[in-house]
Image (cartoon, rainbow, N blue to C red; front, side, top):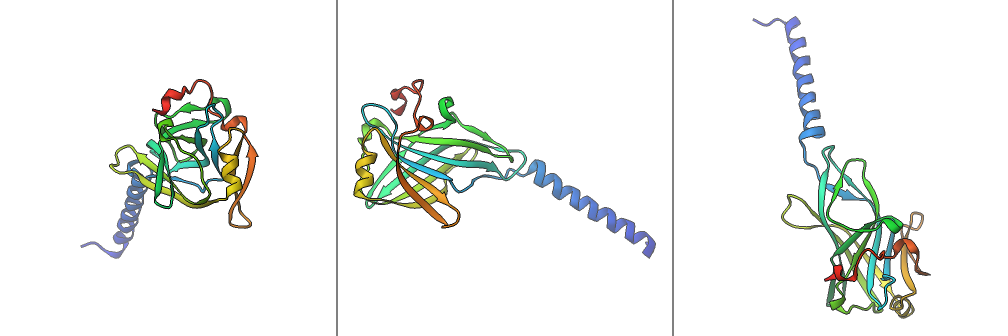
Length: 206
């Protein structure tokens, strides 16, 4: 028979084994997923090219919930106004002049902080109009069948905003205000770090 003095070490060993198993699962075996922080900035407006073409840019951090990391196959934005919906499916990311056409992105637990830009096909002939827009950011993860919605926000555009956004010189910036708990919008001139560089040929929109 097992006496009381023998039970304690066995119980401690079982607890330690259980903790080790849980730790192994959480750190090495669990796939986890990819999440994003609330975008600190959302940009809607021209991409700086002539003739005019619309673009969306988002500054956010992507991070994996597991130490193994996950690979993001695609990011895209759906912008809806009333019954109209448009998909900005051409994904570009980077910083400043290092912007490149995305071919997937490996995301680890420490996260990846990038400016993500989304272009629309020139064939769409898209122009911004005044009204309430539903902004939705979707992510496709390698190994998952369907894209998942990772961020949604309602954005308001007035007539003055729309006129400026449909010119090649100015865009509408939504900057997150932590004190107000909302996005503050301003029309500002185009900045070099949100332009698509020359190496990104317009043909990539097709």
